[in-house]
Length: 357
Image (tube, helix red, strand yellow):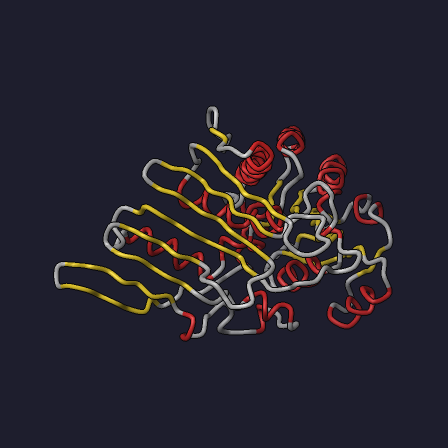
């Protein structure tokens, strides 16, 4: 079977944790060249991926005629420029989320990819987390009845700032709302479609913080409030999801196990029960039905983030439908821009017309 040679631009946390370990296990993909300028990055590459070439410049990837797919796993400030260069070079492109820093940049890249007839996708892999898949299935079953409130959050505890971390600088696209919030917004758009309005409260809570480290973004739908939250000062674990419907509620603690395993160096294709949650973090469903009160544990769906890259390979090789379309990722950026505007003006921002996807 033909293998698509992949050039990975960026081998820091995103490249090492979320991209390279997945790509090497996908049928139809071959991790071929990696931009790894630092000696410690090259050491990891030699140890974990023997045979993969380390390169020192972007041009060594973009100018290689054997490379068909380029993965942009860099800081947000160069997502647009590197993706544009890769498309101009005739490469299919996967770009780490958030797609770009502005809707205008996203629109320009979408137009360029269409002009060139190339695949363009954004790494919204959180669609294949166990907890989100469980929530999605539960909503499809409609046991909660009409939903009135949906709350999802990514909370952490780190009461200090990481030195020289670009995510914590006052830069376009920095802050946890562009990082973790982008996942939550994408999930919400998948579940509920486009909201009627957006309100946001964005804060810098830690001493010396330059970028947003606490956010709440509220999406308004007819009869439904969607609240998306994240912070860096949650010492006790908070619920990942809380759903409230006319028939009852669902509460889910704990996090999908895939990221933890990837950070430990585990390869998904080498673990038979990849994406399976421990029973002790299954969610609770509590309902009032005809026979009275019901309380039950909900077995979590199995996570499968490698599906993202398997789909990319299948789109290129088999002409299958793209799972994460760039227009969907563009809509996430527009919601983020509306959130920033809402925070600046201290008011709800009404969506005029529809998002494009």
